[in-house]
Image 1 (cartoon, rainbow, N blue to C red):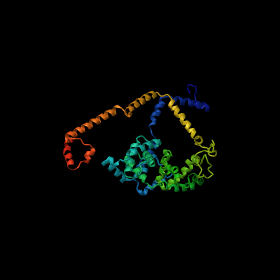
Image 2 (tube, helix red, strand yellow; image 1 turned 45 degrees about the vertical axis):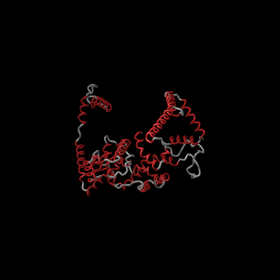
Image 3 (tube, one colour; image 1 turned 90 degrees about the horizontal axis):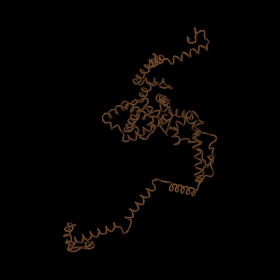
Image 4 (cartoon, rainbow, N blue to C red; image 1 turned 45 degrees about the horizontal axis):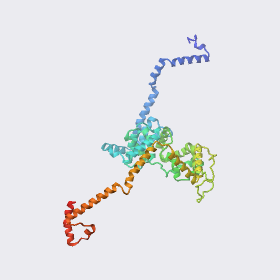
Amino acid sequence: MTQNKIKHFADLSNEERALVMAQAEQQLANDPAQAAFLRKTAGVVDEPTLLLNLAASSAAMLVPALPPEQRGLLRLLLNKPFPSVLRGPAWRLFLHDAPLRQRFEGTAAASRVATISVLDAAITQRCAAVLEATPAFAPVGAINAMKTALSYCHVIDILREADDTAAYRLCLPLLAVVGFEVSALVEAIAVLLRLPRPRLPAATNACLAALARLDAELLAYLERLLGPEGEAWGPVLEPFVEELFVSCAAPDVVFFLWDQLFLVGHDRLVPELAAIALSDLSLPAICSELRLVRDTDFFQARDRPRDAATTTDDAPAAPSSTLDEAAPNALSPILADISRALFALYSRDKSTFAAEGQRTHARHTTEANAFAPLLKRVGATALRGALVFMAQNDGFQAIARQEEKRQSELVAQSQKTAFGRTYTREEVAALSGKAKQAYDKKLPKLNARA
């Protein structure tokens, strides 16, 4: 105000007051005193916030000590996400098994090897792959605790199949909430895997019944694509039923859904949540893609029944560039490229492929290669070496014949010394009586000379 020669702030109009305040704020923002003040207040928590944090921590400490008859009080949090400070103790309360934890700790203290599965290496690789594929649930240092817990679960036969990807994904929220303490993680994972909950394919009917109550039209449409029941529903329902939304929802959403599952029960809530996910989250975006993948037949109309005797080796005509005008989606360009490639493939005959093969062979043989001269010299040298063994009148055979002749002469000389004469194999076989006894008597002398 002094710079602008203003005596009283009240004398200014509203626009002038705003201008003066903006200038004052700009000067304060660049003032070192303002920066020091902000640094000082950044580490200060006001009293109400501090009291609320302390109250939440105190309540969380009391949760594990709740008697069974009072645990129903947690239902006051129904349809509300658990406070972050309360979620860990509450989940441990629902996933509590003190004897199992004590057995693990006793076994680990006696022999760490006894807690390690024979498939520990495969389990470790699977843990690394799941953590890498789900970065939102991949806290630093999680792999050691995760693989140790799952390896022990495989030892005690709670994890029945070491390649059960759904079981690995169920560990991710527990890592984020329960923490990396191995004993607590083993207890939580083991109890979670043993919980009675809907499993596929038995849960398919319950999920479809829930979807029928929520959106009968969508269910009818999906049944035309996938059938009323069966294996075709498995990939659609697996992220919701087997993996409990871990692979298809953000961490905060998964935490909220698991809060409600622990409060209400998996049997009652999983089919309803799966139906909601199918209706509101997933299928409005992918139902047209499912219809394209399943219904589109480029070589025969879907409304005409397929003749079992009809072969599809040759395409009768080129497919339309517009695959499905009524259901545009992001996969249409890709499917169009695939259809054109298939048409080009089926429309060519054997001579076309033979000509292409000849052209490819000619191109590969005529292209310049820096190693070609060297390879030719190596081949010629190898051929010359092989000719030595392949020829009929070579030096090796002559040496072998000379050695064979020398050995024959040596045997004949030894026989003359021992027996006074030579014997052929036939003559030795024909010996009998006294002649045989005399031969056998002198045979050690022959062997000694040999």
